[in-house]
Amino acid sequence: MAIQWFPGHMAKARREVSEKLKYVDIVFELVDGRLPISSRNPMLDAILQQKPRLVLINKADLADAQQTKKWESYFKQKGYYVLAINAQDNKGVKNIVPKCKEALKEKIERNRQRGIKPRAIRAMVIGIPNVGKSTLLNRLAGKKMAQTGNKPGVTKGQQWLRYGSDLELLDTPGILWPKFEDQEIGKKLALTGAIKDQLLHLDDIAIYGLDFFARYYPTQLMQRYQLSEEDMELLAPDLLMKITEKQGFRDDYNRGSERIIHDIRQGKLGRYTLDRCEEVGYEDEA
Ligand SMILES: Nc1nc2c(ncn2[C@@H]2O[C@H](COP(=O)(O)OP(=O)(O)OP(=O)(O)O)[C@@H](O)[C@H]2O)c(=O)[nH]1
Ligand SMILES: [Mg+2]
Image 1 (cartoon, rainbow, N blue to C red):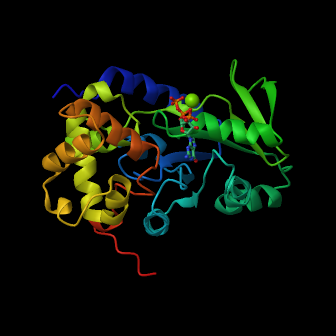
Image 2: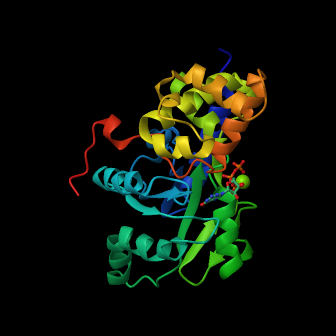
């Protein structure tokens, strides 16, 4: 399999993020609600070190709400601040500033005691491609944010976006890649559209998706493709053949695969979360 994790790109991205890090108080780590683990960059912990972090579980509208609750609790237990949001529809976005203030409470208080005038919280958005970084920046900009131009003395050519009087964001998000050399992670990322299809065989991705839905969301799968209980006894490759035929594509399994992948990405099979909280050994007591 020709999936590669480009080390050259990684080193460059890492350098860029590290350089910007010193100008911000907090980092917004954007993850995809359907894959809150697989859509993370494994090197981020080493890059961010002790920098306060707000994990934003984006695309929550597409994810399984029960799983999202568990993942929120998982990230909190790791010591991060966390919010589930839908950047596209601007849901949960207004909670970001209060969360930042909570995260930076001690620093803000310390500055106040020292008589330092309060200033806007500075943040940057980091995430893998397609996770919704630009959408989030646009959402915020559409509300009250405006380009504030260069800030002399902060960094050369760095643009900041202002959100109300409380928050300033670096206008260029940090892009880091997920670790898609792991085959299962690769399939999950391909299924949600985070990496290009060409990196994997379509039928492999479709079969992975069918197997997953048959296991976790069988009713949603049955409804979408009018499958019987008997059909559901089939193994995923046979199910792919069955669905391809039912769609009228005869034996064009590539076309069948494309349709299934498209449907899953578009949420036509309902909401789902590919990374299961139970599988990382975390059981939310709530
Ligand atoms: N359903 C849903 N779609 C979203 C959400 N946020 C972003 N999207 C969609 O996800 C796709 C990618 O969003 P972008 O904002 O371009 O992602 P990005 O992280 O800037 O991607 P790159 O610039 O490629 O790194 C777009 O089609 C958005 O409309 C969300 O909360 N829910
Ligand atoms: Mg973008």
